Image (cartoon, rainbow, N blue to C red; front, side, top):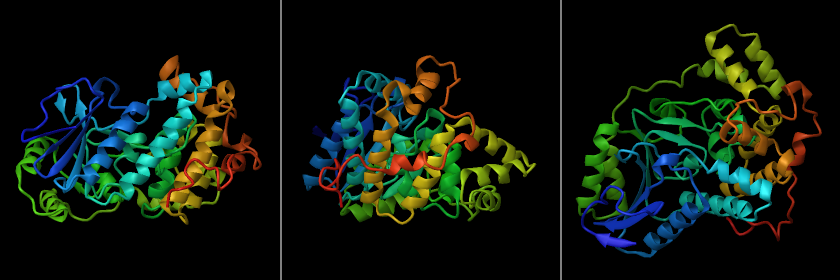
Length: 371
């Protein structure tokens, strides 16, 4: 951790996470551009360490987090967790896989409950674990090139990192739509979905960042107020196709949702049905239940539930739906996952509820102390 009065030079260090205090702000830059800043266990630990140090440092009024792209600061924020590591660790029975999820979810909780303003610059790709380190921010800033998604069903997983919590709080049934289909949205749509607080065009980000580093702010609130004054103004608008989303994704089961989409001849419905059918049928059932359950949960309880879910996703190793999904997408890259079920109809009503049974007691749960 360094203290200086100049901005971080591009690729000044080989560290996967660059951390420094400049002026009155703490700066965190994810520095794994070739992997679109996908999170490793080391990165989770470095970000956690930085946040704890910034929290204790009276010089730091607010924390800024961004991703480093291949051509310089900003670019892609974070494409998620390191799924190739997930695949290797699951097959090897490596305990570091369990450590990754426990520590990542603890980091997500720390961000949501952080006592100082934590400001996320969600430029470019923001998916999976990238949502986990941005949705708890006090200011979530998107850009004109933001590509946001929770596409976990396509790898036999579910939108974790607090996904149940923040997706369930989107207007209407947008959360079910995004979680079950993995649909990608842009920065403007993220604002409409309640998953961002403001938009700043990418080309303006370097000057915005420099101003934040060089301004003698009096308080964290002053940092936030100034940033909010820089947001691009938009006329209020609804999320695209929201009426159709609420109509189709308000049904009780994935089968009813699928039927409603199949009976709608619009381009939106057909594209949405294709996205729904691309995912693991088993995990589509799990995700709908996850989001519906999380609607009545606080963050800590949601993260404990998701820690239970992710245990069940990986403990079968080679028979794991998630291991197979990652194999098809990122290892063999044949894009032909052999799901446990060929369609939504094949998933038995007894099967998906097993994912919600905790393998731990309340006293032994790895996230038992989160409040």
